Image 1: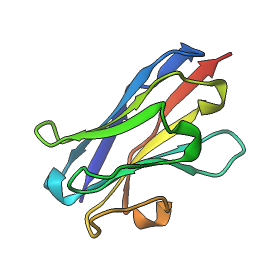
Image 2: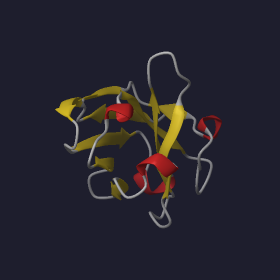
Image 3: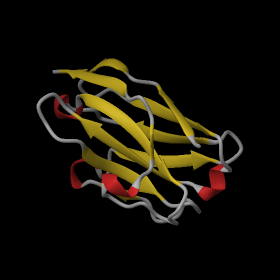
Image 4: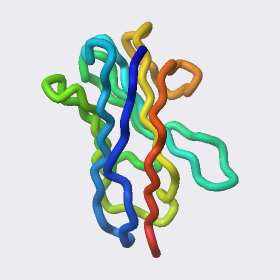
Length: 125
């Protein structure tokens, strides 16, 4: 069983930066593909970014390309989402996800077996 604990959310102004963290435990971090998703009020959960077990070729949704960076630290067993130049439309609960059966989970949330509890990001305009 894999446990995921997110942190780093908060209330910021437009243009600010935040770094979300997702600490994983219960399984070797190198065996997990990691993803970030978000859900705004009244909307479906949507893909934000994903990274493979090896950390190469990350993928992003179009609206965050050039602003968000997904990374992973194998020594800390932690995945990160670095968010720059935040916009009001980035406001959502952000969820970390992981899967141990795939090299790369991709954009589909059904590809991920494990989920964190979510962390709120609010960007005031």
